[in-house]
Length: 159
Picture (spheres, rainbow, N blue to C red):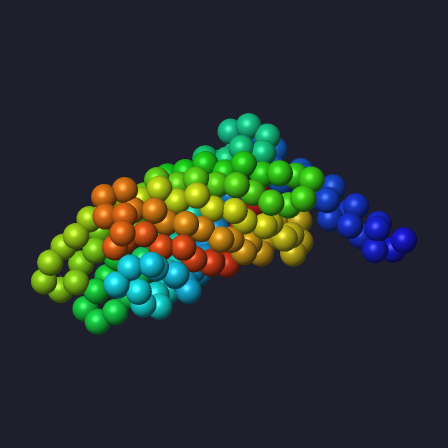
């Protein structure tokens, strides 16, 4: 019974955070990219995301990111997207379009991506969340060599 009351309290406080006109900030670490190309390697990404709920359960997002996958190589990312929250179970479905600039010391390369993701929002308190997610980063210009799937974990702040 106590567990049931605790779950009800968590659900009630979480639902209030997905209302229109709320703001969102997130810092996430992603990695364990599972590339299916010849360029497969472990990478670690750092991303910052900001969002605004324009309708209940619907958020528009902007994202910046940095990745250092190897020697003399740096990737910078800018993106926009949207996310829908399923309040009944804590899941969210998102989709992002992003531009990535790759600088490897000699050559520069640019990629455009479409990235669907599914995440779970676990509230640590009324405003702070832990958000694990699975994503697929599909390259729109170099599908076979630049597309990856991965896992990420982030901390979100709803206000």
